[in-house]
Image 1: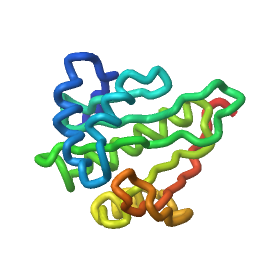
Image 2: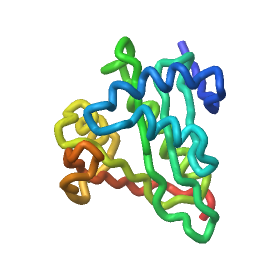
Image 3: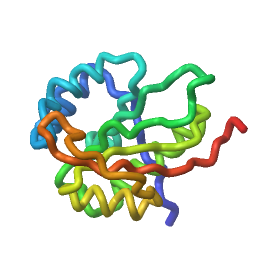
Length: 155
């Protein structure tokens, strides 16, 4: 039996309530409900919803071609019922594909040092820790900066 390809859609206004509600989970890092609300309106940021709200992903900023080297995974959220079932891995694979298709060389993410499930997810997906940043988040928590080279389809 063949597996079905993942279903992605760019987030629209009908997805904003789901994204707002999910963003409350990031409150430990600071006022992320407001921050994510701003990113939803930002033309440099892409927001993608995975398979009928199993999760969402925010990527950006998408710069003009001469500035393209690093694209950020700004937010990755997997709905609680779908965690530890491969959804996060699939979402990061999609992020790598988007980065490659848009001509970026690296995909970067900042992950809270205490967020052990996310740290493991990024490590398993082939991201490498580049540095620890103290006081990275508005709440004062530290983060690890992760980086992964992506195969660039524009080269």
